Length: 206
View 1 (cartoon, rainbow, N blue to C red):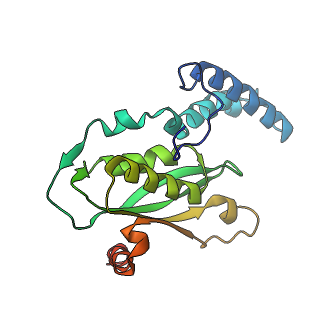
View 2: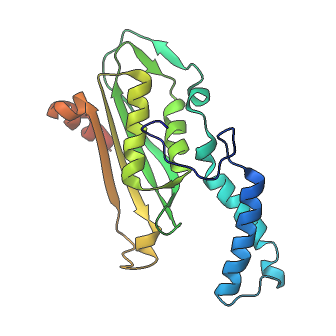
């Protein structure tokens, strides 16, 4: 298991989701949940709900099945460029592992190359891969930074995520306007305050 991975206990011997078992198990669980909250799973509006929920969770947790090498697919390019590369405003949607409620927001990713860069589309795909798992925003931030650092061996990596969590907006404290900001700084982004300041200024620029 890589340091940016999370354990997944629904895998088969090939290390991938056993989709058939997950689907059957999820449908059964959803029917039991409907009974538990006082609903009738056999009524017209709910008859296909277990099937729909199973498909939904399969899609929203698809990040467990992504192979990082296939995702990157050789999209690393040798360049004589050592200034900051920033991809910001990457929209993501994820599920909080504590309540299975959504959290969503924007991710901002930067790195300083050390001889090579990664294809532009790959960074949003890396964000999506980690978002499509049961997550904590803090962990997801660190995982994104760790994978980019391991893949590129850059001079530094910075990741900032702004998230809004339905578990605090819908339940508990019910603070609808609250948001959470997490960051992970590696290499020069951690050691050099000017590098961090440049990154943050780009994030918050109009």
